[in-house]
Length: 118
Image 1 (tube, rainbow, N blue to C red):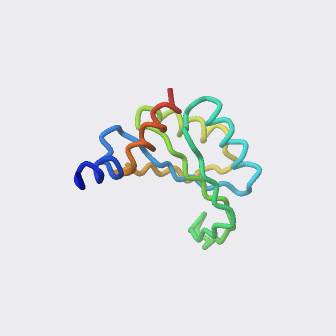
Image 2 (cartoon, rainbow, N blue to C red):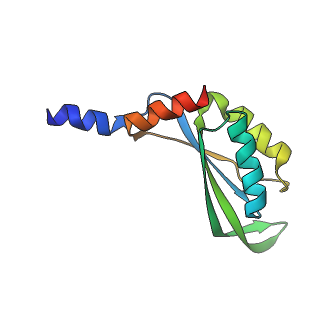
């Protein structure tokens, strides 16, 4: 019984779900991109984390910027479309676009992700 319970709570991700990390300069930009991704069903959910402080090198200078960190939940089959959409609508020359494979999670959440992307 205990093993069955654990399987329904935690499940390996064999479905190919990703979290795409992307920063934007402000909340307005993040919300616009978020709504576009959701409307086009390129993302099931986007979490916005405001007031993230990024430190980075840009054009031989050390930069510091307060940004909004986007966590975009999607599927590997949509990664190229997500990246392309963001590059087209993002104000940065080189936006942060990092895709991290989800290795495990709640089976019910995976089911919801799948339904939300179809």
